[in-house]
Length: 166
Image (cartoon, rainbow, N blue to C red; front, side):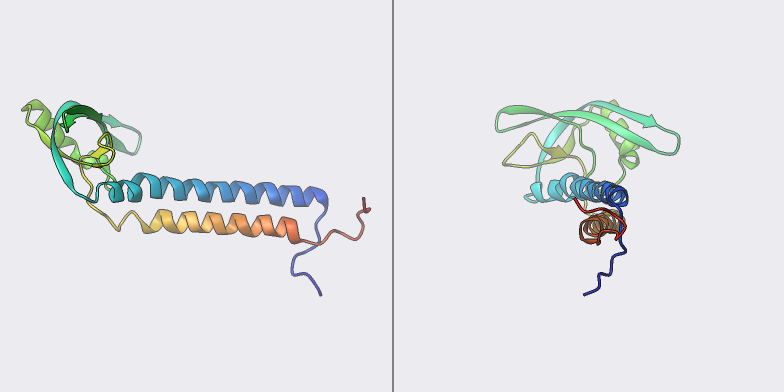
């Protein structure tokens, strides 16, 4: 039976395996970042328990092309005091700066969503957004698929006929 993979030397196999491993790792890291930060955070706060929190810090960090809002707040739940710094799970944090800065200036409490099983996990905005989900999902799937393809190619490709056997 003829292989669909072209014959590779050891050096070519090593390069293909290295590239495939890098792509596979990039895809897995993207899946982890997507699911752990956004979707898992959304699932953790599914009970939608709101508690009042007092803002301690609101600042805008401006980069070359983007800006983000950094916050720090404290809240109490079941007689324990917790600190949080998450603004949003899906939306960009810079869109919340003016509202949060106004609340800090007026010393007005804000509402945060918490995970009742682990009250130290909190977020100000947990609104689900489909807009940011497809792009990282397609990229993570693509990188993982390409990495798997290259790794399988490095493993399953026949040896070159001019290579000496071991």
